[in-house]
Length: 225
Image (cartoon, rainbow, N blue to C red):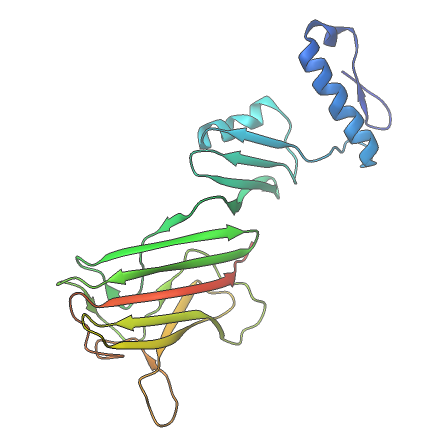
């Protein structure tokens, strides 16, 4: 290919050896020219690879630029080229998240959580069933979320709802509160206090936890990119 002064590439004699590559180069050259992107610029490219190893190898096969996107088949998500690096941009299937709370020792409890990403928006939901060795160690703990919250304000915001269910029929509703610049979410439950104050998750709030009890939440927040 020959690069013209305006940055547009055109085929030369050496490109005629492989018609398929030639047609691809011509199509990209026309696309770049019509896009009016200027010298040395091109339209973003889309790639599809089987796994992270193939994604890493792209850098040795082509010149990458910010705005390019790649679909990674084994994880089922799109990654965006930004700031010279790849970032996960959109998940096409749920990504498993292991329950993590700084005030809860999971023991032999079992969790089933997953999240979806779309740009900077995160949606995380699921439930955790207490086991015989699960314990709440402190009332000052919080969820250790997979991404930092980036709302742009230091005022705590409600990220979503949470609930607690006993092995019987008892049920409590609450909210999950997060704050900009942190990757945490504090759970607060309505325990019927006359003052209307919500109770932080603890060994006795919203109930004395036992094996078989279920803790659930459904939250959304903007992650920091």
